[in-house]
Length: 331
Image 1 (cartoon, rainbow, N blue to C red):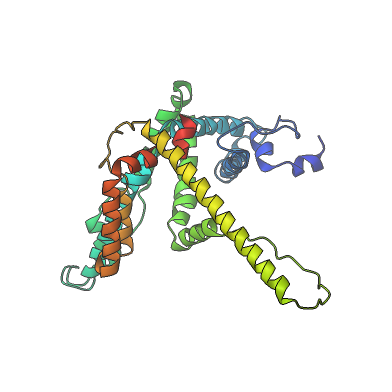
Image 2 (cartoon, helix red, strand yellow; image 1 turned 60 degrees about the vertical axis):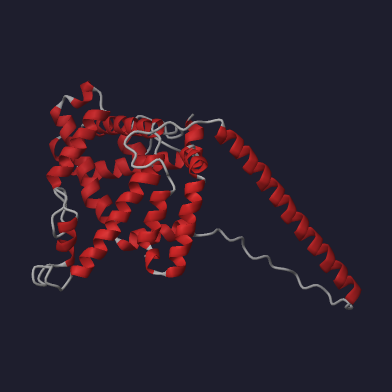
């Protein structure tokens, strides 16, 4: 292989799979082909940033360490991907996550009310310190700094649950993999995803609509106006719009009946560690806390109506929310 062709190969191919032919695809790691390529790029960039600088000084011509570390990281990703696919994340999304977000907003507003008052150590305590008093965690200090040792032990437990014994027992190999994951999380991932601009940009990217490009119409030659033709066109357009709406309603009605029949044939199992069997209540409580719906009469009335509807149709909603499309796909 020439030097020019080697430089044109992707970084993951050059570092992780140096013996792989240029026209061969990378081994499957997780998810789709696009996600597979992105994960390999993250692994390759991590190894180049945290391993290659010091390993090239120790052994300049040894090219086997990086593929070996990538093999261990691939085993970890495979194990995590298998665990995620085998588990039902419906209670996590509809019960546990809304409960955590609701408590977070509640404690934040309580801390904001205590700011510059006698409850804030005579007005000397800052906002992060007040919030940390309401939600203390051993991994985060009152000033917002992350505890490296806590995350190091957390990653070590993940490796113990994901790796086979022959890969977990060698300490040198395990420490290198653990520190790579730790550096990526603490230096790149967590500081970025906790920034408000990143969260807002992610929401905007998810809500962005792909609008079709505008069509350039060629100027048509002027035609003599005719009121009769205009009326005919309007009548036909109205008939077409009404027929389209009727067809959409019929399709929605048939789809609803089919969904109800499928869900009535299923009895959702009781998932462990679930706060409530009514999956609609935690999201409604979360929305109420985020947008302070309980402070306005109109929003309180709408929220109460939604809760009453959720209570009356709780059995159907539990089946509908529990048997989500990912659950149907896996089962």
